[in-house]
Every structure is written in C-alpha cells, then in structure tokens.
Amino acid sequence: MADDPMTNFPVPDVEDLPEDLRERIAEETEQAGFTPNVFRAYGYKPSHFRPFFQYHDALVEDTPLDREEVEMIVVTVSGVNDCLYCVVAHGALCRFYSERPKLSDQLATNHRAAELSERRRAMLDFAVKLTEEPGSVTEADLEALGEVGMTDEEIWDVGSVTSFFNLSNRMSTLADMRPNEEFYTFARGMED
Image 1 (spheres, helix red, strand yellow):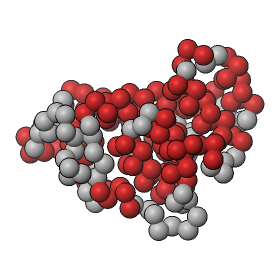
Image 2: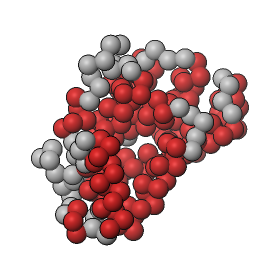
Image 3: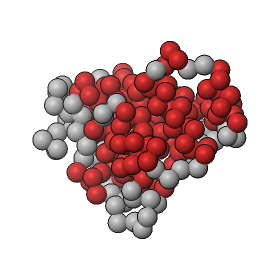
Image 4: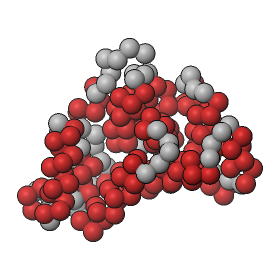
C-alpha cells in the first residue's frame, strides 16, 4: 500500500497530466531523487495542484522564519492532527534541516518534550493553540510571541504555515495519502 500515493481517490498517470504539472513533478523528482506522493495525489485535480504548491512554495521561500522552524511547525501541527503523510514526510525534512534526528519524533508526539529555545517553544505552543482552539486566540497570544522576539511578519508566517498545514492535513486524511518509503529513513543517521 505504501506505493499508492492515496487510496480514496484515483491517481492519474503523470504523463496524462497537463505539461506545467509534469514539469513541476519532474523538478521535484530530480531534487528529491523520488516523486513525493503528494505531487501525484494532487494531480487528481490540476486546478487545485497549482495554487496548493504555489502557496506552499511561498510559505517556505518568502519568510524570515528559517526552514527548520517552518518544518518544526509542520510536524507539530501534523502530529496534533494525526496526519501520517505530513508527520512522516515533513519529519524527514525537519531531521534534515535541524540536523537533529530525534527532534521530529518528539515534535510529532509532544513538542513540549523537545529541547527548544524559549522562542521556538512559544512558536509551537501558538501553532498548537491555533490548531486546536482557533476561537480562543487573542491579541495576548500575539503579544506573547512578540515578547520572545518574533516580528509581526514572523508571527504572520507562523499563522500562515499553521493554517496551510491544517488544510493539508485534512486533505491528506480525506485522500488517505501515503508517505513514500524514502521519507521514513531520510536523515535518520545524523548525530543528535
């Protein structure tokens, strides 16, 4: 089953997709050395594929947050949401960018158990609150992030990454997206 990108909806053959999607998938495959299943799964609906990956790219490329922090948010939120695909796939990226092989497992199960700076703990506490209790987020929560040194843009981006991956987690669950086998072992051999 792990070879199936998703089980609840049909997965089109890459060669049957529009040219721009084929090009994007080819770029990702070249960079990663394999095709992450999320690309093939989102090929099911090309009109959704384009803005989904465009927004993802903006979140990781146009932010003052470092890539490790982005992946920490993704793994923490995905753990709260029990999203297998995102915990495993982004857990691999978190291990890579943090160079801490245990960190992603800690974040996926209980971010409070991880060794984190005050800034990063506050960032993840906020991401969890926005995920679990969005109606209870107040200006005081934003001020608390400012007190640990986060700028307005960083706070916005923490909220944006959190919100996007809440959407992504729910779509992954709906589709029953399956992580590639490569993600399970990627960056596990690093020293912690």
